[in-house]
Length: 145
Image (cartoon, rainbow, N blue to C red; front, side):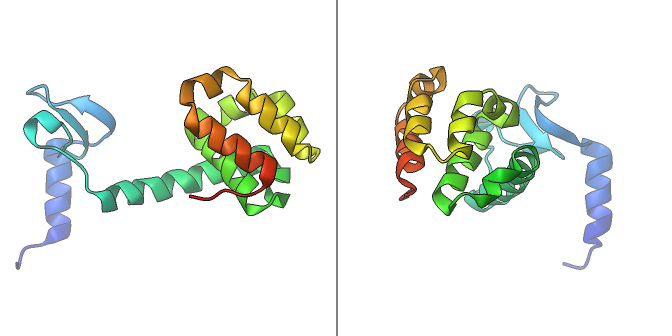
């Protein structure tokens, strides 16, 4: 391998373009980024390592959103921080901020009541076991995965 890899990257970006979301290419196949085929029907995919790379970027982004909007979350224990980060990953920061009563209860240290609120939400009906697991962790301060 004796070609200029940086030049090849520039060349492929020029020819493929860059699209930061999934789109259908000229043949109708799902693609992302710089011509990355992800359509299963055509053999496309990402690797687990790539998924973890993307996940790490998402975690950093969600941490920033959560801690900047709700700085008191930094004072919670590990399990409860992870509950709220999971919540943010699932709902986005706007969705999390919509849980005003639950957030007030968490900030006040009323974790059992916060867990009950979580389980009574529309969200809990949508995500079922995830909600049960996260509410239990909010109540107990323990999150086993």
